[in-house]
Image (tube, rainbow, N blue to C red):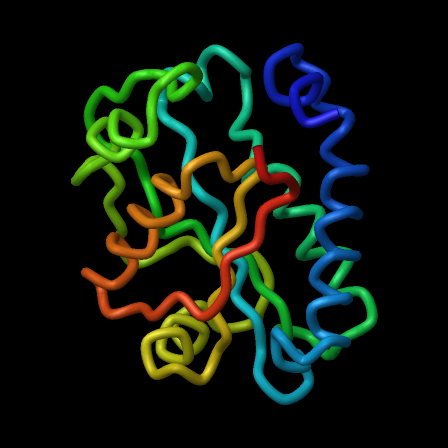
Length: 176
């Protein structure tokens, strides 16, 4: 399903993938791996797609289902308990990771994922959400569709750290 969504232009699958991610996050909350959003609000941070990938697909595949995930989680919680924020961007040219070795994937992304103060979906006051994220009062969850070697997640964590954000959890829909 992920490949059909991401590579075959089946953007309507974002609803199903977003719902699956919400279910996964609820399970992690129930297990105590992620705090209750009532107690510690969540900030979902999607791994970025390159500009070339967005042009090719016509949409940012992870951000689209992460928006759905945010809406599903937020439906049963107080306003602002779950937000999605997009501080990460791919800078420069990176190769498609398909077929690259673990080392080549890491080299391909090294220094090419950057972070800046984010746009925020959900929540009433973006400045307050940003302050909560920087102050550790909002649980930051990095989300991606597939983890193969961990190179993308690792580079995202480094980029977030460079702007003072701690990544508290990382979640993917599938491991390859």
